[in-house]
Image 1: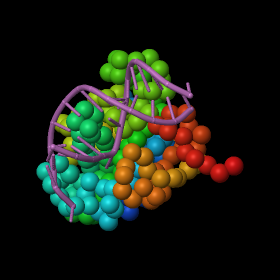
Image 2 (image 1 turned 90 degrees about the vertical axis):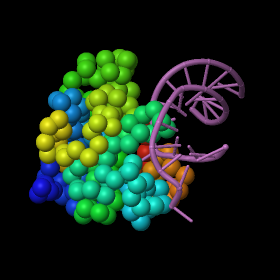
Image 3 (image 1 turned 180 degrees about the horizontal axis):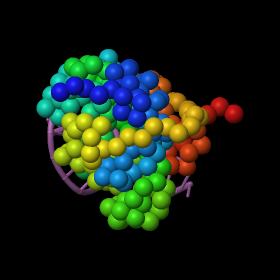
Image 4 (image 1 turned 60 degrees about the vertical axis):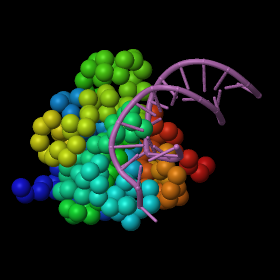
Length: 193
DNA sequence: CTTAGGATCGCCT
DNA sequence: GGCGATCCTAAGC
């Protein structure tokens, strides 16, 4: 199978921190439901906080598969989290999708989440998976084919970066990226001024 | 506003 | 047996 690195005009063979930045503003849809990505985090093989750091296991195998595919894992035994695989096959890099601004299928997302508040529908990696219906079934799937759809960024994004959230290793690596000022972030970025 | 605890599963440089 | 790339609720200040 030939790998497609040009989904939504993004080169998924690039380093994960570059892909993470480029993904902010991209629209992510699963079966037509989703919104614009407003927050991402990069992980890499040479990264103490990454699932891939210790090498391949059955859980993280998709991270070592071809780029422009998904890596979906279970978090805290309860939630699902969605990543996009980067770099070359076998490298073990990915971008965690942390928050979306809901735009498509909002009522469907409200049903799945069991809440009304637009702001809380997709503002967190576990929340957005629940809203989009992403489960372990979607692990290792290619991003350029249904049910996934990635639409390019329509205009230049004002992007902030900072340390990643919810990790205990490599806490100072500034590999969290977000759309400046978005109210759909899982957490505000600390900015000077 | 901040902090604490519980839910629950796969993996263990 | 311990610990997460989390979320929700409840309680405290």
